[in-house]
Amino acid sequence: MPSGLKKTPTGYQSYDGNALKAPKLHIEYTEGAAWNISNAVFKQSFSVYAQDWYPVGVFFNPEGTKMYVIGEMYDRVFEYDLSVAWNVLTATYFQNVSIVEEEPEPSGVFFKPDGMKMYVIGIWYDGVVEYDLSVAWNVLTATYLQDFSVATQEIYPRGLSFKSDGTKMYVIGNQGQDVNEYNLGTPWNVSSAVYSQNFSVQAQEPSPSGVFFNPEGTKMYIIGAYIDAVHEYDLGTPWNISTAEYLQSFSVSGQDTSPQGVFFSPDGTKMYIPGRSGSDINEYDLVAPPPAGWRKIAFETEPPTPNAWNQLKREVGTGWKKLLFEGDGVGIPELTVEDFRLNPATGTVTGPEYINDQNVNTYAYTFIIGKYAEVDLGSNFLIKQFRQFGTSVHEGDGRFKIEYWDGAWHDWITDIAVMTYMSWGDWTFGDEITASKLRFTVTTKDTGGSGSHFNELEVKY
Image 1 (cartoon, rainbow, N blue to C red):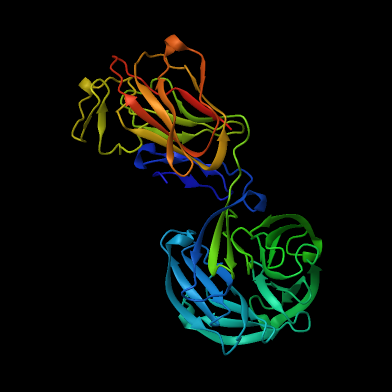
Image 2: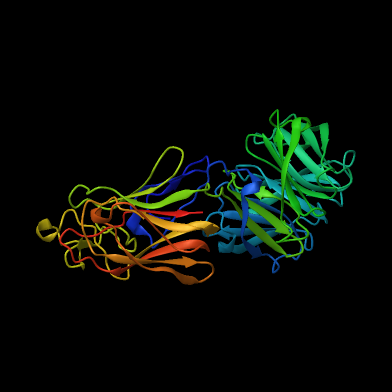
């Protein structure tokens, strides 16, 4: 992600920073996507076969830099380090702890938010086992403390979850095909648990294997190995399962036919599912598709302040979103502005010692042959057309081409002139394509006195 770009807690993308610090720009439209499983898109999977053939539960620390997998084959909790937060492909196995003496047939794992307690549930002893960790999030420091039987409610417990403050515990099971709710008199102390009520999920999943709640307790998610889907529920009263109402389901059968648990990132934009048939952890993004109609993907303003550095900003408000580029050298995000300045008349690049603006055309938008701007749409879309608006007030003879990505790069529109005020209007190009990325590459450098620049570029989905 380019320097200065940041993601808001609500799942929106906000852009504020230097656009030239990254080789490509990734534009995401995530409004309303968080916690909505209908927006889930499979991203990638990570094999845990080398540690355990049958993963039955997964958990992450709040930062997404630690992943924990519990396995049924070897009765251990495996700890992994993630070099890139929430990206399972960057996971590296670190260490493990055996829980076989307390539960020889585990089915789920959960950690206290500060990483100082670990909880394991299993179908051998039909109970929840509590451990203390002397070093937060380090499973090798886990020490058995106590356990709590749930056999009166469920003799085949498959997953567990806790309320954010540790005052409630939830157990899902195959025998009852339901979620059981417990009140804890002492937060995070399973010996203080008292059964409260249950909620049947049989209508959606007759073989449930995992349960998860969002941090506010207004959403509940269950997963099962019969329907092979995640099921989403709304809770009218937070953390009260008797107020749960089924909302929708999302199939994961394309990735695994025996899903064993479900976990979400704290912002609800990532979902993880351990798969027994694939011996892996499957990662999903929850992203909303762009709305129908024309979508701005690049836009350039009127001439900026002389010699202004290029900046990338995100338009706020509803409706179309557009990227605003201000300054010299638009459309060449490989260059780092701290290291380079551009002479628009010659196309030459000079180093940071070039501080005299005597030879710099202050209103030019330089094109360098072979440089490109790449836009990642996030997933495949049927792109119906491309259009360019002639909003420039400067002449120029720069030209560019557009390529698209569908697993490989292909030419789409091979030669387009940069529009000027003399061609004011709306030019539309291109046949229908299916693509997840677009690349705009400079083919002819401007030779005019005042330079050329991208005008308003849009694609229609």
